[in-house]
Image (cartoon, rainbow, N blue to C red):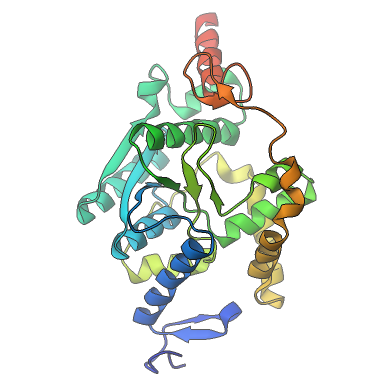
Amino acid sequence: MRCAVCKKKAEVYLPHHNLALCREDFIRFFHKRIKKAVDDFKMFSEEDKLLVAVSGGKDSLSLWDSLLKMGYNADGLFIHLGIGDFSKRAFEIVKEFSENRKAELIIINIKDEFGGKTLPELVETTKGVPCKVCGKIKRYFFDRIALKENYDVLLTGHNLDDEAAFLLGNIFNWNIEYLAKQSPALPEEDGFKKKAKPLIYLTEREIAIYSFFNNIKYNELSCPFSKKAKSHLYKESLHQMELSLKGLRIKFYKGFLRNRKLFEKAEKNYTLKPCKICGYPTSSEICGVCKIKIKAEVSEGEK
């Protein structure tokens, strides 16, 4: 096949776009899809100071790489969770990535924040659900660092597959409040900095191709806690349907975005106030992370 843009030999075919592209034009296509998401949802401007939450995976690293090449002022934030070889490898990759590009990287090690405990140890002592404990901790430090270091927008590497799977799961369970909060960009309010997801128009496959074409190393180890995550099932279901119904995911997700106002009434049926311990915005007296710290201390004291 020939590239639809320059007519050179194509290296990739994108079925849901019915588009064949050479390497150079695919990279341009990738950056244009990011720019489209940024413009469509007014995510940020060229003057904004951006903070990218990087995990060591292909999504967040491809996003950071793209933003730097597109001329944006983007720094990285890595949360070291202490999950054995998985976290060790992720840290090595992110550190090398930032050094090679001379990009600013902020590192938070949760052992320094939780009395020497790693995420697996926190899960064990608090008897919490691993992914929920992890999610609370990461969101907490993403928000705190963005605010403390005065960044304009916090960015995450959520892609089209992620958003479509999240949407499908919330519809199956009719989680109206989660549907109301699912958005490509959330405004700055209630003590939180603005958040955005610039990869919403790009699939996991497209991101994998971009990382390959740009020689981006990423952590190929799977988090040991993610094996039972329901999101994998939703993603696989959508993938199977996509094989027969080209463009299903993007139509599904864009349809939701067009009709998101239907769920907006459920978006804020609670009031946020400062956590009594750390000051983090929360709907209860004590925020989720401080509760984890308290439970961990109690469990440790009981031993």
